[in-house]
Image 1 (tube, rainbow, N blue to C red):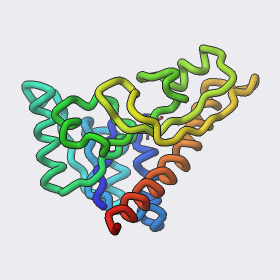
Image 2: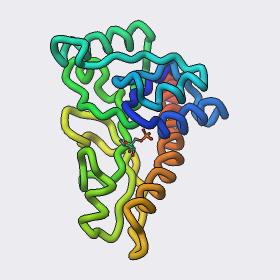
Image 3: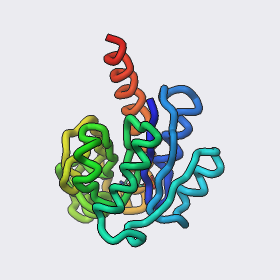
Image 4: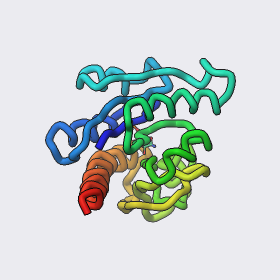
Length: 194
Ligand code: GRF
């Protein structure tokens, strides 16, 4: 099972997944980290773990379709089975979706369908809801829509600040994402032996 991880920023979820591959919790190979921002910290994390990095930006292409065609070429060349979006801040378009339908997984820091979009943690915090959480889901053509694979809830306490809530959410993410991927990959590997 070969994974490609897509990230745009800090890359802490990428690192959590990469560490779970190293310990054997996730029975897969990370073939590459794709980053649409070459200066993102995720790139440094990958380099320090000797994981190949590919980086280019939609700005280098005439259209989003051409950018994704290049990505698709890369994924096919590397024979990638599963694409994992770990803080990849772009919408996946039809070029990639048509070929990788049901094979692209995303993590979002809220209890979807509540608070989709770029600011899931902040939006939940300022909405004064009693609980929020983390969602792992398959990608479809929408913004943080698509079939949900797993969710974990967390209470927002009266003493929570945005900062404390962000820390708690990230702690959950770093456990949940590797766990869910490990289980999903195990199931898929079992099915392929049937
Ligand atoms: C995470 O909160 C994830 O849920 C969201 O983007 C953030 C990425 O963080 N999609 P990191 O780059 O993995 O540290």
